Image (cartoon, rainbow, N blue to C red):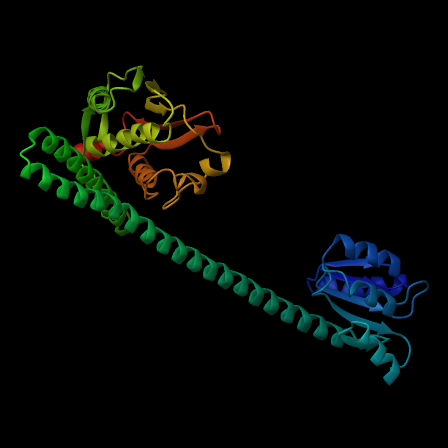
Length: 377
């Protein structure tokens, strides 16, 4: 937008008419004081500023707006009825003007200058946008690199921990065998097996994340009983954690269409996390029900919970809550993989939580996804 500042209504009308005829958007002010008020509220590409005005003259207006951040990139053309002399022109440039035109104004020259300033403005704006986009891209590469390095460090630590434990238990096993201590040997073999299983789960997550990144995560969809899968998981998890009370409520009864093993993977992740992040609690609640032709499944714990900020990021790849990362092991990819699985089934995944009051992780799955029929056929 162009702002014309002149105390002569005739000059304003003639300039406005010519500029609007050439498709420029125009605003006007009849005094320096009025111009300053408008400049504070609006942004202008160009100000055509009369030098000789009662009250604030054009030079004073230009000097005043030179400090406004909003007018920092605004070009100023001075107009004056006085004959152009070196002192006047110098004063005009020193007060912030970029050009100077004497009255009576040659409209062709004015239009040429206005178009030139607009072209320069557009080029500068596009260059600035390119600089901003490039800077954002650089920051995104830096952040991606930082996350990659952090993930490699975490993965190395998480993989090293069970490996170290396995090595230690094997050394102890050798001593037990030398003493022919069968009970101790059996106990230590169980501990080795647990560490191997932990290592296997970590490797499986790493393989899944690799498949997701390369678009090769495959799904074997068919109709299966959600209730049967859930009952089996709860039974196995209860045996592994006899001290924990798992309160299960609701049922689906209908079969759902999806990859049974992948859905099982999500359920196990939810229950495992509920146990992991509620170390002082002895119960979790598992709920299943039908909602609007969808299966709604949730696992609620009574553990540490999380803030709203963390809830918005918890399903991001490699995200780990800073204040819990030292207390709880993990790669920060389990929930990201769960989200990918549920998304690929046409469902939704989420969490409700309050710090200190536990968390409820949930997902929904459509009973009859739109792609089910085509895959069966």
